[in-house]
Image (cartoon, rainbow, N blue to C red; front, side):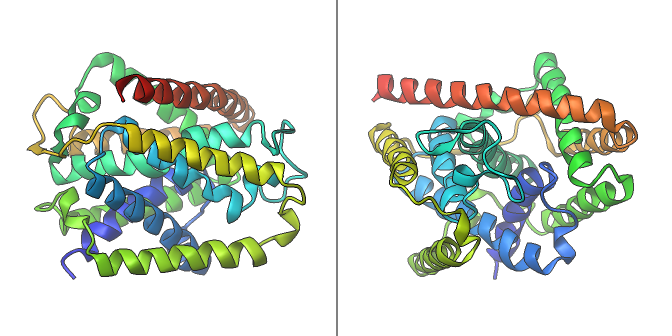
Length: 323
């Protein structure tokens, strides 16, 4: 039971950054689908890949990024978004290349899920518990430039939240503030813990594997089956990125994850609170100007295509050089 609070905390952080920030989930914490499907999906993926990373002693940010890429590939087998476009769309927004969406694949697999669903929840969990892996300290070091970049990023994210909630400040606030309150309550129960608190035993990992297998199998055959590809190429493309990511992870160097107390020159829980207050204000402001918000959202989404592609390419190149 001691592991329950940190497990719920990191799972809720993943829901915040992946689902609430994208505007995909509105008040998920009072939704049957959110509590029974979406939350377990994100929590299970994050716990599984993080535990594998810790057991393999491959927890650098570049290695975690590659685990996050594998995480993001669930958008093929489960939701079929990588193949057929976003739910309720008529197909991939920019068409397909090698059977996958030209925009959907790099945004979700190379950017959103590795960073928002996986790395960011881990980093913020470290911030909140006050104990951080030594190799992660560099990205948490406070600088004026980073603070400006984070603020600009929050402006972009605010447009996603506003759009996903149909530019309703009330809906946006309930989704965002409600999730943050849950995080605060769980944070109060995990202040004396760290990432090692969510290292799972073999039995727990076995349960996770069984759950994920059933989730993938049932979703693939019964969730929107009409969106499944009828040719081989889309499957081969997805499988090839599993292979590429796994090979890069295995070839990368092992290093023990040494935990250190969060230093004063690093971003802290207080900084996280400040950024969330700024985000709430931005969401409410941008909900009042949907015309401006939609333009910012479109520019941001297109930029994610390039940022994601460059991030994956650079990460792969650096891992090959270091191996």
